[in-house]
Length: 109
Length: 122
Picture 1 (cartoon, rainbow over the protein chains, first blue to last red):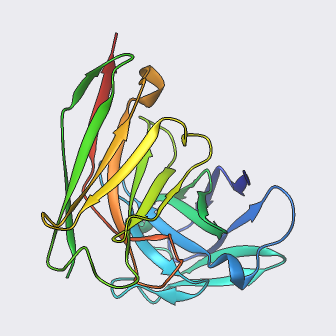
Picture 2: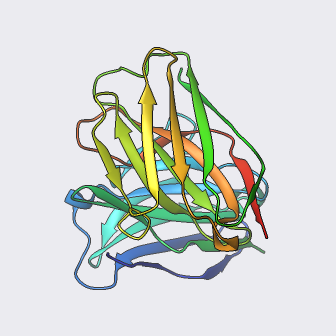
């Protein structure tokens, strides 16, 4: 089964920009993997942030965007806010299975 | 808007079979192209997809758990269920039920339940 890798932790300054990435242990991410991004805050269920590479959920703030970058799925946060501090998980789809990345703990400091 | 609520015992003994149910409201579990799935999260760790089911009964399982997992659907009660056999302490986790966005063959969770903690005791 594929292993999906994310940065374990990242730090961004308030108002700053940060990019989180997501990729399989071998190969590259394509639109065919239909990358998803989820945000999870402590004690809460995950919430879908981005689906199918770059589409936003109805609640997703405009400062979040999804893309493919350098063979990986990418989540860019432009203009970080304190409330964006959370764990972020990506998910890639394969034939008959889906695989979560290990998560990135994002600190806004 | 679809809402999902997990229910089931919060404590299970080691080597036994745990069972959880997800009650769906705000829509029909027989909705075309929606898949219904389970995801878990051990304390302090990441998310793991367990498996998904279509209302017709077609199932998709995580290969690493497939030998112990059964997911079923009850369209008359608008709910679906998870059974995990031979549980150990490693199965202690928050279990989430979820549904997809509604695209055929897409298993990615889109709407999530609030989760329920299941602890395996020895």
